[in-house]
Image (tube, one colour):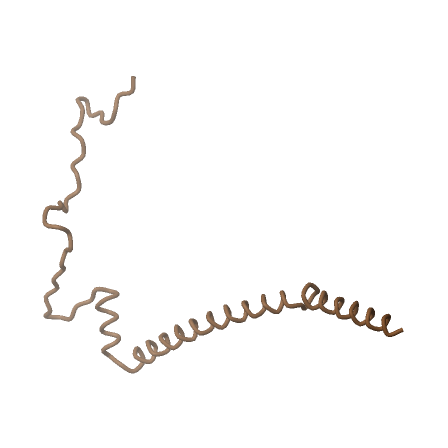
Amino acid sequence: MLRWIALILVLLLIGLQLKLWSAHGGMHEVDALRVSIKKQTDENTRLQQRNQALAADVSDLKHGDQAIEARARTGLGLIKPGETFYQIDNQPAGASSTLPLPPPARPGGITGRVVR
């Protein structure tokens, strides 16, 4: 009799372990949900930081003339009356800033290739 009870308990333990590791709501699903929660938490943190930066930018634009002026100068290229605008070109000294000339025109005003 004791042998049958022990056998039933062992089978019950095996059945519960199988359900824990492989069934719906088991350990695999719990691990997947933990990974999903971690990704969502990281995304939320990144978006909160972006929102804080945008809120600070909006506050500066609402309450400060310097922020508006800086935006107008950098984004729109505006200058104040009486200022001199200098544009610095960062090309190397040997590089040409002109576009290449078009090929010379052929007699009769025809340009392009002749295909034979």
